[in-house]
Amino acid sequence: MDFNTDYDYLFKILLLGDSSVGKSSIMLRYTKIRTINIDNKKVKLQIWDTAGQEKFRTIVRSYYRGTKGIILVYDITNVETFNNIKSWVKEIDTYGENVENLLLVGNKNDLESKRQVTTKMGQKLAEELGVAFFETSAKNDTNIEPAFFGLAKKIKETEIQTDIPNRDNIIKPTRGSEIKREESGCC
Image 1 (cartoon, rainbow, N blue to C red):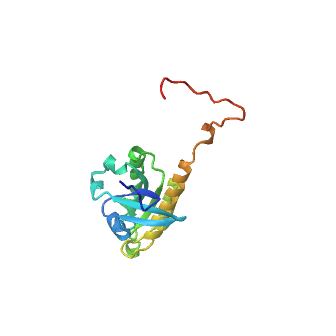
Image 2 (spheres, one colour; image 1 turned 135 degrees about the horizontal axis):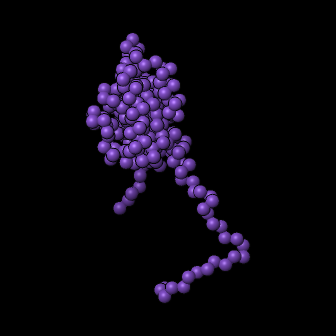
Image 3 (tube, rainbow, N blue to C red; image 1 turned 30 degrees about the horizontal axis):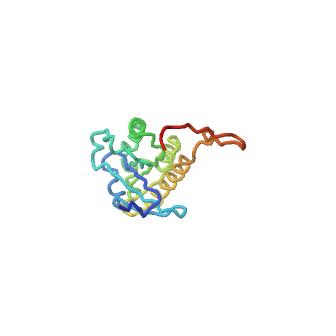
């Protein structure tokens, strides 16, 4: 059986936020599974949407399993969805299995005349959370690609850092030292 893959990395990305902020539209605009090229490596993005389960306020733990990055989405025309981002962050802290790659997205920036959340408010929250920030429009395909690409690049950098072994735990034999071998009764 050949387990050869057509990618170097596979990153599960979860879209979180209140109902009707445009998570499904963002996912459909970008597609559920997409392979991109980052630093000459093929990176497959597997994008998960909560499919309305956010109405129950706590997302099933299985959604978080294996997640490498989370996009927190709010609707710029609904300040309540913006105010709820911090409760989503608390949920990530509780169930997110140490997910450290987050991105804040203010969606529906095509509805400027109905805006309730300023760009400055989004930038300030992103700064408080220590995450990147984009304003997007799934309808007009504004900043969707850069948002996903930016998050994927950050995840890849994090993955590379965690793949490097802790050099303090590496034991190097010195010249002239004997390697003791345990004798066993077998081969």
